[in-house]
Amino acid sequence: MPIATPEVYNEMLDRAKAGKFAYPAINVTSTQTLHAALRGFAEAESDGIIQISTGGAEFLGGQYSKEMVTGSVALAEFAHIVAEKYPVTVALHTDHCPKDKLDGYVRPLIAVSEERVKAGGNPLFQSHMWDGSAETLADNLSIAQELLERARAAKIILEVEITPTGGEEDGVSHEINDSLYTTVDDAIRTAEALGLGERGRYLLAASFGNVHGVYKPGNVVLRPDLLKELNDGVAAKFGKPAGSQPFDFVFHGGSGSTEEEIRTALENGVVKMNIDTDTQYAFTRPVADHMFRNYDGVLKVDGEVGSKKTYDPRTWGKLAEASMAARVVEATQNLRSAGTKIK
Image (spheres, rainbow, N blue to C red):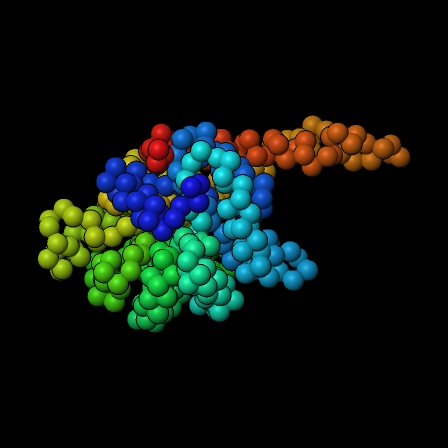
């Protein structure tokens, strides 16, 4: 059962919450990066999450038509087949989807899973993300209510982003300023609109100074302790026991985070951390090294013929896969999911 059933995905998230660890959610854009992610999870003996953004889906759809649904469905179906060969369990997820792409991405993908579930099967993807951070919170939560109802019926978990994450990802950008910190009032309004699990399970991408993209430690002020304030505020409002953690949090924009910041986030209810920038670099770095070192082999210089063994994509592709897999292993160690796979 390498691709998690809905029941197993819920178990994975519950185990992470109870064990104070989180699953790396690795963005993939090809069958090769998919294999790299699976390999990394297997080598670390960690279950995990593999995700496709709108930009990744467009790339997977081919540059002739750039059809996001076709691209994401094709890779998901591929994953269902090849993941059988890896001794870990993974969930498939779609990353950031803003309002103007819902009808061309998440809603059609939910429909695909609805049909599969009606026929007695499991959903194609185990979770989808609605990124309404560019909308007012009222509009954001209104759309989230609609999507959560459909997701619940299709046995899918919804991820919502209620306030902005700084930087830019796939065309969605926000300034780096004080709006990057979710308030207790924001969290309470979210719980009032979406419930606390009784209307369907959802993951919450709250903002505590997160920024997408590349930045050095210290350039962004992360406040993972804020997540405790949000949980405590909602617990008090809804009569939950003191110290309980009503939300399953997602850590976005984690590149450059310190080990201490990650550890604090895990203690405060983070069960999923998105990793894209770092794995992109890990995949590309050995390819660049190979090209520089073998310039006269990968190019037909001065009338020569080059070296087929050198420019064969399998030669440098194997290096890229190994490097990205190693970065995934590192992520599982940082997030404490290494060695926790479901037996």
